[in-house]
Image (cartoon, rainbow, N blue to C red; front, side, top):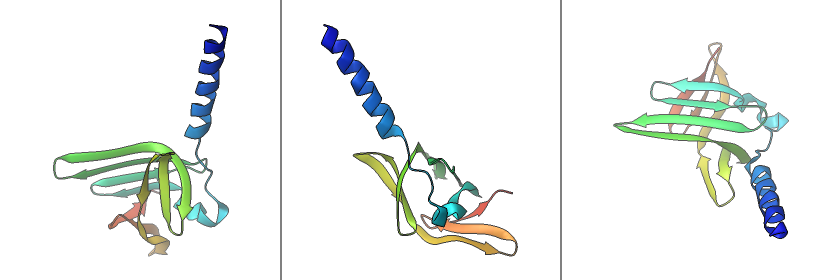
Amino acid sequence: MKHVGSFIALASSVLVLTACGQTVPADKAAYVGEWRAQAMALRVTQDGHVAYRRVRGGTTTSVDAPLRRFEGDNFVVGLPLLSTTFQVSKPPYEEAGRWKMIVDGVELTRAQ
């Protein structure tokens, strides 16, 4: 039974380590912030946490998970074997003094 306790402690440590996200690389720093549109909100933190909420019709989709990696302009969020890719068709850019980007077909504006 002594080994069961050790196994549980080891398994818990592995889960904590796999739940940790990657920090946002310097070349993707413009992604960090709170981004909003009428039916969508996205928060990306420097330490690699992503919170997302989107309402379409009567359905709400939410993700609150670690950043796994960037694939070009897109970014992958979640845990190994259970992740989602956010499709970024236009990475962060400045327009008329406001930062915007297009994610999953929605133009988002960074909150000031």
